[in-house]
Length: 399
Ligand SMILES: NC(=O)c1ccc[n+]([C@@H]2O[C@H](COP(=O)([O-])OP(=O)(O)OC[C@H]3O[C@@H](n4cnc5c(N)ncnc54)[C@H](OP(=O)(O)O)[C@@H]3O)[C@@H](O)[C@H]2O)c1
Image (spheres, rainbow, N blue to C red):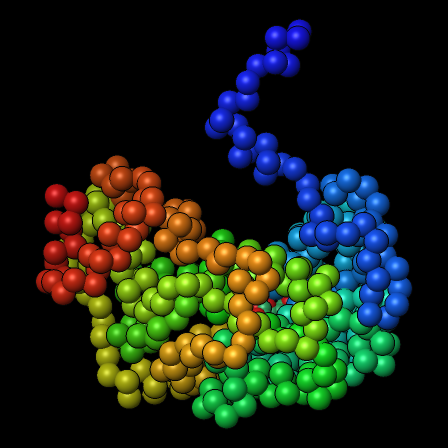
C-alpha cells in the first residue's frame, strides 16, 4: 500500500497532472471592483467554485465568444449570455456549474433586453461583430450602433469594466466598410466610456475557424488575388484567455491591446502548406488538379465578388468588402499593447497547424502520407512552398 504511494511519478504523466489542476485566473481571494464592491472567491478553483464576479458576454454565441464563456464559467464567474438564436446558444449551457451560465434573449434594437443583460454585471465584453450586411442589420448597425447602445447602457448602470473586441486594421478611414465600422466603434466606445479596454485580435485560428476553413479548398477562383494578404494569425484560445485576464485586471482599463501571432504569413503560403498536409500522397489523385490554381485578374475577381455580394448578401466572404479587405495587409499599431503586457507568450502557428488541419486530411491520402507533421516539418514545409518550382513538383515531394 505504502509502496504504491512512494512510487516516483512517471515524468510523462506530470504534464497531464498539471493540466488537470484548476487555477483561478485571479491572484487574490478578495477583490474589489472599480465600483467599490467586494468579490470573495469561494471554493478551490473547480467547476463548483465561484469568483464572485458577474460578466456579460455579448456575441457569446460566436466563434470566440464560446471560448470566452467556457473560460469564465469554468471557475464560476456568473456568466450572462445574451442570445438571438436557440441553436447557437445551446452548447454554452454545459460550460459551467448549475446556475453559472445564464441566457437572456435579446435584440440590439430592444434596449430593455440589453439593459436586462448587463444591469447586474461587473464586466461587459462586447464581441458582436459582422463582416457582411444582412437582411436586418448593416455592418454599421452591428458594429457601431449595437456597440453604442451597449456602451451607453453599461455607463448608465455604472458597470465597472467594459471590454470592446475590435479588429486588426480597425481604422475609421479604412476603405473597407468592416475595418472602418470597427474603427468608428472604438471611437464611440472611448467617447462614452473613456476607461474601456479595446482589444484588436489578429485573424484567429482554432478548431473550425473561419480563417482556416477559408484556406482549405484545393482550388479557389482567383486565389492569387484573394489570398495574397499578409497577416499575423493568432490562436483563438489565447485571445479568449487574454480577454479573461483583461476582464479581471483593472490595470488594463483605458488601454488598447493588439493580440497577434509572432510570425507573418501570407494566406497563399498557408494555403499551399495546408494543401500538402491534406492532399499529398492521396491515392488516385488527379495530378493536373494539383497545379490548377484558377488564377484571375483583380478586375475579374472584383466583379465576381460584387455580383456574388448581390446574389448572396448574407455570405461573409466573396462580397465587395471582403475583396477590399483581401487587398489590405495587416498593419500593426506600434502604440498598442500585446500578449507580453498581459504576461502571456503568443502561440506559434507552426505548433498548431497540423492539429487543426488534421480533421480535414482526406482518408485516402493517409495511406501514403505521413500522419503527423510536427513543428519542424511544418517549418520545412513553409520553406518548401516558398521555393519557386514547377507546380507539378508537388506530387514528387514525398518521392
Ligand atoms: N474571427 C476572426 O478572425 C476575427 C479577427 C479580428 C476580429 N474579430 C472580431 O472578434 C469578434 C468575435 O469574432 P468571432 O469570430 O467570434 O465572430 P462570429 O463567430 O461571427 O460571432 C459574432 C457574434 O456577434 C453576434 N452578432 C453579429 N451581429 C449581430 C447583431 N446584429 N445582433 C446581435 N448579435 C450579433 C453573433 O450572434 P449570432 O450567433 O446570433 O449570429 C455572434 O455571437 C467580432 O467582433 C469580430 O469582428 C474576429
